[in-house]
Image (tube, rainbow, N blue to C red; front, side):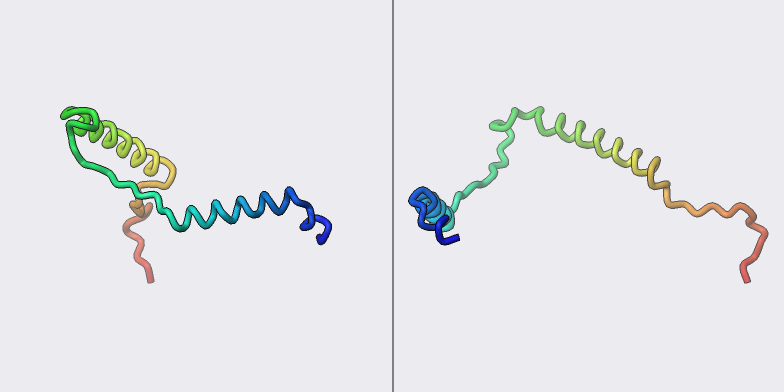
Length: 83
């Protein structure tokens, strides 16, 4: 391990990584989202996006019913009483 740490290239690479880590922690990247209809696709973008999102939700709901069942408990003999 000592021979590996004495290598000059390894020391330079580790120094660069430390500097990058410190720089990333000191200089945060700020981002924010704007909710303006005209900038992001126009006035029709939002309703069309909601339509496609709704269709996707319906497909997912249908697949969940197929694979997981609908949650109803069916009793085969309703006259039988549990004791």
